[in-house]
Image (cartoon, rainbow, N blue to C red; front, side):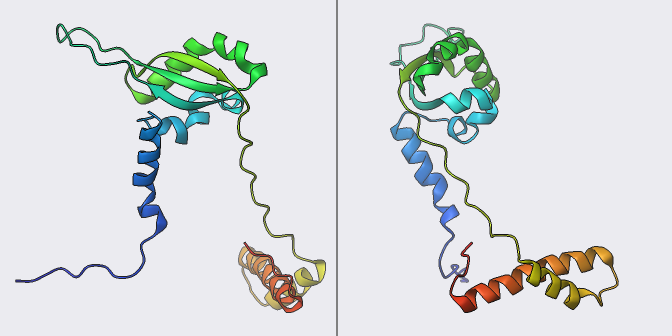
Length: 177
């Protein structure tokens, strides 16, 4: 009887995230994670900038009379910036059509709006500062023996960042990225 060896060591955090995210979304009634992850792609950047899904409210299950009787769709609750509320109401049919088209079934039947502030979008972290002119010059000198021009340029850029990072670490000012 042979047993497969279990992988040892730490697992990547990403391996746990789908279950954690799914549980959090289901607690809020959002069984379709794509509504959160692809919101801007589904409704467009303009609408996504002023409205975000916060909950899906499903109607109570009623007994179906026949297989041809469709089930009622859900109500999508959106948090909407106050100034955008009226425009969002006018866009509701379009938003519903785009969501249902993306999901591939008639999931959303209506939209309810809750006015309130939206959380600020996450700030993108600034990248490292550009290398100094001295570091660029030193890196170009070090890479000048490389024959291929594209490779020489790439090595000079990499070298300039490495030189600057090394100098910053020496001074105790290392950029952490």
